[in-house]
Image (cartoon, rainbow, N blue to C red; front, side, top):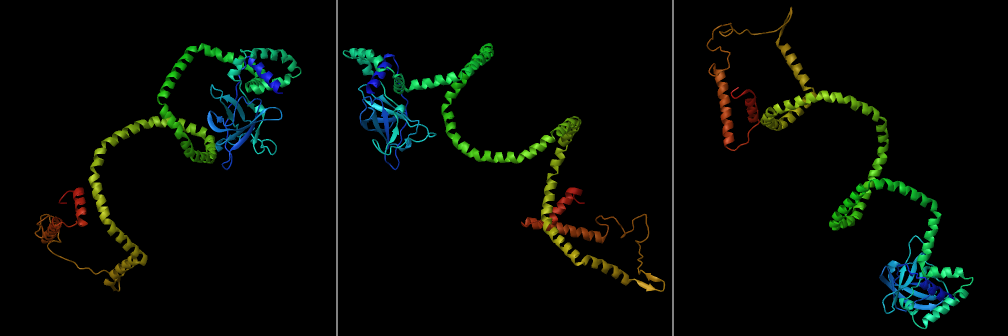
Length: 456
């Protein structure tokens, strides 16, 4: 089997195949212990103990030991110290790659995807306690110095012998050679899978070609617009590059924004669910609402003139309305000062109404009036006193002492009332001059002065 593998490797070199391995990440163990993987390779390719194990170029562990299996394959034990890369999964891959020009190697791994099961743990036998990575998921490179050796003696002679014996060695072993070549270069296996998929989709590819022709035809007719789109896209990309830092900051803030947006979207979804019946009812009445808005248009046209005139009237009445502000302030002061008295009066009238005092007062007036009248054989009569003086008769000229005009100097009573009013105003003025607070009569007097003029 080892000879067959060597023949296969040389054949791959002769046809110029480039060996490509896929990278993977390792992981640490549980509880602080390294995560150990027993990886099987066709050839360890000069790897030695202590070399690095990398994931995407970052060191995550090292090669713990190397051994040989019963099938003459290399068994490389990998210890992953970083727990973030454990465990390896069923689709994990590893490849031995050159690290420097002096022949140092490292193992480049891909731990696989979490959607697949974890690697199987070896229960007993060689590598017990480690996790098994089969040879079908590993690959080894062909070193550049080995390729160069075929040009030197006696390597060229040995290569000729290998080629001479190639037919004999591969007789009835085509399937084994195919498997070895695919393991030597996983890209070949992937290429086979891609070609198989393309073969299964040949009808879809044919339809894609015809549809592409139908799509590219209009695009060719609009090639100037397409070229302008590319130019504008370049301008947009240049502007975006100038704001790359701000865009990066926006992307960094996006997760927190989405976390804050999630409850709002949930509430919005609840609102939408609750609003569905309302939307259904609105849909039912949409036609009627449409007719109503249509019929509302003539009314709006007719009302436009009225609204214009109303605007003019509002503009003309603005000055008078502003002029009422002092009166409104005085009324506000009057109402504020009258509030306690009005409250007390409300309580008094409510109490009088509740106890029946008003009815009793009216009864007192009625019965008191009746009690002062007389009664004889003809019935009830009202007593009255007839007053006769110089002022009881009708006169066309003023009679001294009998004037009915309420002006100053016409009578002693009127003069007395005027003197009392003057005394009250003087007392109010002296009270204000002494720093006192105006009484409830002062705002009322100012209000009456404003309404009917001073001296009314």
